[in-house]
Length: 382
Ligand code: PMP
Ligand code: GLN
Image (cartoon, rainbow, N blue to C red):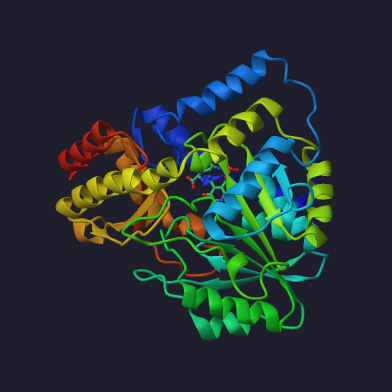
């Protein structure tokens, strides 16, 4: 059997969701909304299903969705994209990440990854025989360590995988940080795989800037979006890659060998979603921000050291002020079993030695009553 896969544990999201179920806990661990996405999007997919759009669609995605992805790129970021040659639809951002890494990495190439990192990145880089170069962000500010980042790039660097807005930190990379990164990418003549699934989920006036919009980055970036996040439909697993035509061929060939195509009826729904009016996209950040504010204020009131979060579904909170004697894994297990509230230990997002061990990640993409009940349970437990 494959040794790297045998050595990979079951994802923390599955582990904690199973534990939540076992203990009847409110699941603020795995990031999925407990509310449904827009009904016109769901109805469009349902109608397509009943209309007989149920056979293999084109390999790179149904034309309608590719056109909608191109339109979305122009509308929000001023990017001109050829829907026939520069968009590849995938089965979720998860597949897109793998397909983009496969598109550019050869065995022995180096790939820069930023910790804390989403759990699929490292195993996939390793499975491809590439060499990860980890650069660490540290709480509470998650600032970009510029010297360490520059030192991680070298003659063997082929790519960097960038996640902004970032899970689990809620960091939104600034224009200055992106400019610094772009300069490194240009100087080392490499590619950027940009996981931008939380592109519309930003708060307090923070705006997502795709690295692809920076000078010299158009042909070097592969920009990944996800219907799961943009339309609160995480089970649908429809992702989309936007990249230069010179890269799209390899991304499509990776997709061809991973899943080949993505359900056409769901693609139809997502196409309707990406064409929704500006008001929809303008509202989703503020709606989520209200949930963030509710959970952040509640956790702070209970004594947690709540970190600032500028985007994504997640808040990280320092539980040391509660007097808990143990690490984040013990904390998340204990609150699941005793308080009946589940969170994710932030160490799950680190692979290097000696990670910060006193933060729990809480998802706030939940109804107000659920957030309030979770806070009430934590208060009784404390
Ligand atoms: N990237 C990040 C940073 C995520 O948090 C997630 C989880 N939703 C994904 C990728 C996966 O997205 P999808 O469900 O579309 O595969
Ligand atoms: N992206 C989600 C999170 O960070 C989980 C996705 C998954 O379960 N693989 O919670």
